[in-house]
Image (tube, rainbow, N blue to C red; front, side, top):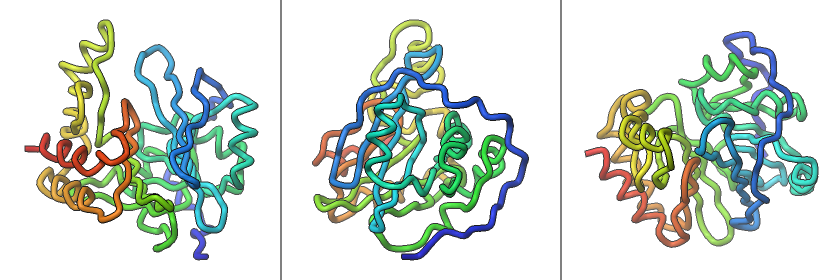
Amino acid sequence: MATLPTRLHSTAMPKRARGWKVLAHDPFRELAENLWTVDGDLEDMPLRRRMTVARRDDGSLVVHNAIALEREAMSEFEAKGPIATIVVPNGWHRLDARAFKDRYPEAKVLCPAGARKRVSQEVPVDASYEEWPAGGSVALETLDGVTIEGVMRVRSRDGTTLVFNDLVFNQPRLPGLFGFVYHYLVGSSGGPKVPLVSKLLMIKDRRAFRAHLERLADTPDLKRVVVMHGTSPAAGEAASFLREVAATLG
């Protein structure tokens, strides 16, 4: 099994960690024999976030968008395998990355190449997606037309799962003033879409990104898509969901 580089590439000194701060969260949900998710709260807003955990062929775990969990849930987590890789999917989803690194100091921290500078402000970065070993049950891929975010591909017995972050949303309308702003100004709620803020701040070539989403929709054994915020489409609807999202790019 190929291993990640041991050298560090941190481009900035990390800030002081906020510690292991647990917010309300749901139990683990098993999607496949080597794939789980946990949904959790964010402070001072109705928006929720999602951690995805995948097990590699060697039994080690890859944690995508780490969320600090309560003690019982962490015991369940650790029973699934050794935590070897912490994936910070972009420069904004860093909240519990340092706490995880402090708890599992042997784990390697990865992020997209374009997000390395920002992520390194919170936690030292070991490698980028491009340095992830090819092959195996878990892959980290860059996305055409984007530099600061990618997609995690997980192969299970029942097919392939694609795990996205802030580029692909399926967030229902949220209540109150936050929900109004999030829908009308940020453009991040109201069904399958690439949010307006992502179009403006993250995508450099919409045509290239749209084409990449359409190719991903054509993955022969595509089983499911996992999104960071909102409702992941039902198994079997992944391809049509990605095509619908791609269409929002014009």
